Image 1: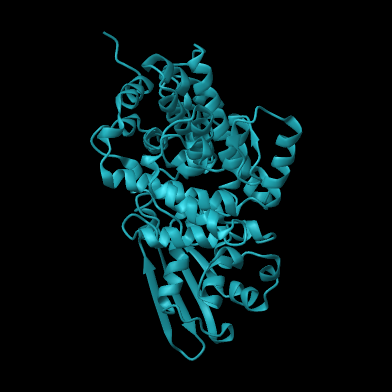
Image 2: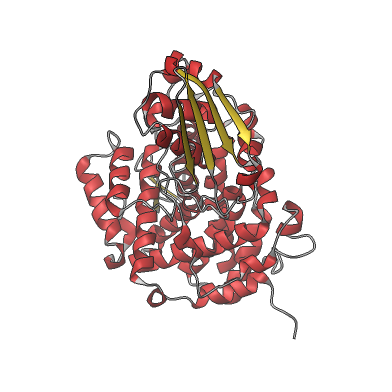
Length: 449
């Protein structure tokens, strides 16, 4: 008997998983991930890339079956997934699975929430689908390897598989249909890093299209539309096409025994995840008490090579690009003692203290730190003062990592901060309450009403 494909093995596991298989702790984490995602989705509603995409969607029309978070209107589930995915990624506060280099929520949850609204699914069904989407997306991202990330945005590529898997679960697809959904997801998986060089808006297409394409793959499979069953490990499949160091075993290691989605990180700083350890190391060095910019002589920031591979050469020409500029992020932390969403604005790009500090920051690749990547995303900082003093800080796990997690109240506070001025307080309170009690919802179609 021929060996089953990786897609078949994943489909077999996911199609059999039930809500009763999830522990109360696991369910709680999935609900917090959903609340965290909702905050980012609302926070991105007025950003230019999102409003442009929304204009296109409004011109296209669509059956009013799923809610568009940025304006509260309804459209087809596919187009709602597209917009909500884009909106949830643009402020760079969505979650991150460190080992797989994947932002699962932005690509997976928009597809599932849109589909659940269309199907009038229960809260428990939605939670289970989110769990399946995270597990499949993360495992494929781990298996494709770090070399994939050099050219491909993992959230765009592997997020498509996660969205397809979660959608397949929510639709109740059988094992064959589940495999087909993954096959059609894989052939649509795309998203290149070249946009970052120019600060182009394409990054918001990545999670939006991943959500939309994954959902489309599952809807097609439901109709009997077949997809390649060896899409992952086949000779012309996803792994060989996009990676030099893929490891097929990582798709299946401890499958059914360990939920890798539980090892997720929730962002505490409003910038690219590769800047977080350096930001926190700088804050620890100054003990969160910002010195005057003129008193700092020099700052050395030591990071792992993969951070430089992605971020080196990115210039802070726009507030969004500044989120990917290590000197800007570290200088902001040193000058203001925090790195919040409001720290990325046009005025800050011309801030004399920030510019002065950026000139004194040197970014260095440290082989010792690189050895630990991607299991750790570490950094250390040396700050030399003009009066001869020196301050040091080092971080393996910044605030928000599973080893240094946000508490429930901190996730709620983050949600309130992200939605302040965008969502009435009463609506925010209702969303928090309903999300934290989601398994009790019999019908989520009115969840975003």
